[in-house]
Image (cartoon, rainbow, N blue to C red; front, side, top):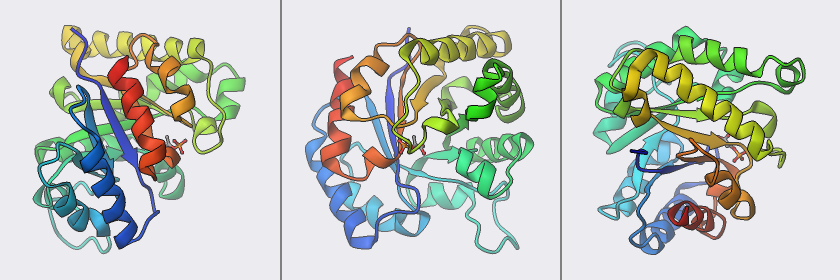
Length: 249
Ligand code: PEP
């Protein structure tokens, strides 16, 4: 059985306190009774006020990154236990912006994922190739290496994998549905090799310039169990049509 679909909004380093609360309120009030899981991942400093606004709306809260340690001398970092303490149920790990800006390796991401799951969070592990890697025909090899390196042996139900081609993030460029389908089928096969049938519980999200206008065709692709959305998660007007498209898929 296909896992329940998930849409997560990655607000990145955007919004301020008031706009975070306004957006969270709009989502909480307008999401209705959709049959998909919905999460927002605000900047860590706004998790607490957003958590208060979301209340029992059913919209889940997620962090954008976490440390591997529970606590300690790690200035500026946030532990998975702290995220859980604020009401998070998800955390994004290994986003390409973290891999690039902070030099995070597959081993770092695997350790963060393990720590996140130990804290009771679900981890959204990001993988994806650069444009140069795609043009060199290396996409599947890159994805295989990132999956093997970044995804720990763990409860598949607590794992989410987001395929985010780096060249599609924030660019308005979207792979063809054939390209998305090829990578998602490949990821499912790779994960089945490791987790057996349990791999079918791992939600495979697509991320990279998802909008209301292209969401339906992306969600119709086999093994696409939802989306990780950046830019279009910053307003309810952009985000809710994507949620509706997944709900209708
Ligand atoms: C992202 O960065 O996770 C992302 C998918 O961004 P965008 O939707 O803006 O391409």
